[in-house]
Length: 88
Image (cartoon, rainbow, N blue to C red; front, side):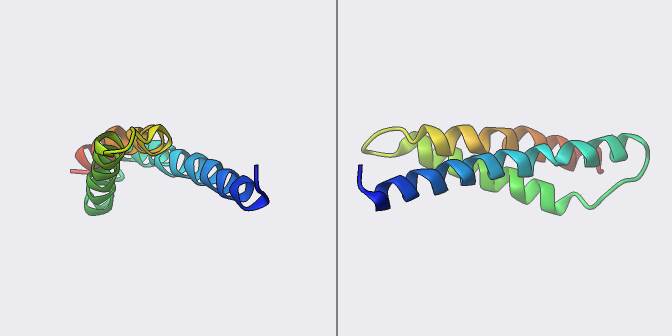
C-alpha cells in the first residue's frame, strides 16, 4: 500500500468516527428537550436531511455501496429527527 493510500484510509476512518460522534452529541440536546429546555429544531432537521442524502449517495453508488459513508451517517438520520421533533 502506498503511503498516500494509507493516509487516505486513516483520514477516512477518523472522519467516519467524527461523524458518528457528531450525531451522538445530539443525545444531550434530546435530554434537555425532554426536560423542557427546548432548542431550535432547524439545525437537527437539516442535519437529518443531510445524513439521509449521504446514506442515499452511499447506497446508490454505481460502482459499489460505500459502507463507511452509510454507517457514519445512519445515526444522523435518527438522532437528527429525534432531536428536531423533541425540540418542537
